Image: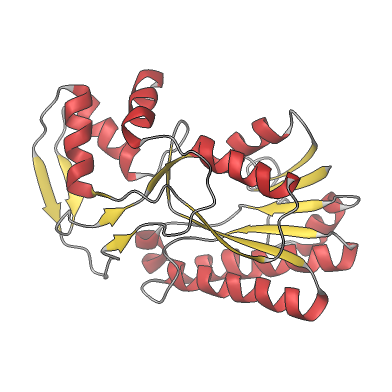
Length: 263
């Protein structure tokens, strides 16, 4: 199978192409490699996607806080980028598009709204053109090479003996999933020929931010000063997968120990 991966230099993308390239022909597409490889550039997408069987669309801007400051960038990158991927598949007759959405879709921030509308674009291309669009609502991913996640930030603070900043009350419950589980799930979706639909990619196990801090302090043996910061936007209090398609996910404690030993 020949597969184009957008955002191939990103956190999930870099792991995914390592896994997929063992079995398939991979075409990479990332603005970090070439400024023209921007998902807002339809012509570039079409040129790179010729003769591909599927597109895995990972390229996106993905921080709630940043999206509040840069709404235009988030809407153009996430919405226009997804539209261009779908239009590329339609024009070239590519059978399947896997679109990485978010467990946090909604109307809280420009990011969450942009992801909601990317899902609607996928729905419309399935209904209008029969394109097999697969939407992945991915929960909180962690692992090597992630520079933006709360886990990486907390670990960095612990290593440097710095205070940890916890947003709002810290009672927010999240479903933390290892990047290895995400890459294997996407591989299975492609190889097992999954059909159109929205699928959850999580563990089904919830951990509050305060609990996460406790687990990390137990693993590292360090007890940091904890500061709480009130955010200017509402956070989801409970975000746990109820019907995840992930098979035998890695336990959080095991994944954190592995990550700590690798950095």
